[in-house]
Structure formats: C-alpha cells, structure tokens
Amino acid sequence: MPRIAIEYCTQCRWLLRAGWMAQELLTTFATDLDEVALVPGQGGVFRITLDDEQLWERKADGGFPDIASLKQRVRDRIDPDRDLGHSDRRD
Image 1: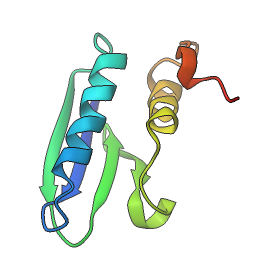
Image 2 (image 1 turned 90 degrees about the horizontal axis):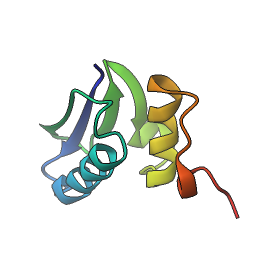
Image 3 (image 1 turned 135 degrees about the horizontal axis):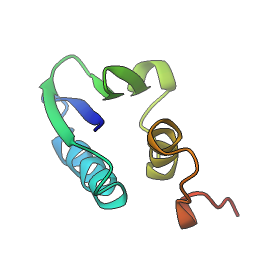
Image 4 (image 1 turned 45 degrees about the horizontal axis):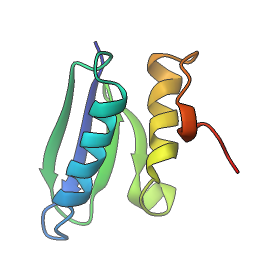
C-alpha cells in the first residue's frame, strides 16, 4: 500500500500544518494508505511525497497546497476512478 511522507520545516514551525494535512489524507484515504509520515526538516522545506514521488514542494509549486488539490493528486495516483465528493467539485 502507498506511503505518504510530509516533510516540514521545524524552524518555520509548520508541524501543525503538516499534521492537519496528514489527518485530512488519513480521513479521506483511510483504507488505501499504509502510512502518512511526518518528517522533520529545515530550511523552509515543505514537501509531500507518495512512495518517493514528489506530489508537492512549497518552493517549486509556489506555496502550500489547498487540501482539495492535494487530495486530488493523491487520488489520481492511487485510485483515479474514486469520487472525492465536494473536493472534486469546483463552484
């Protein structure tokens, strides 16, 4: 099963943001993920990987992901036919 890692900057105090995103992913993909790991880092890092494939990187992608976009990126890789409900709808 897939493993997600959220590497966050301890100097920037982004643990709460990383923890919230982990909670959201675990709630949405409860039986589809093996693990969501929080990985302490430094130097302004905020990187999310799925089985070592980068899904999001704060500097390269221009900030932090909104949770709907992050869930869509995860879904597109682990279960492309899955309906995410309101996370898939754009009003």
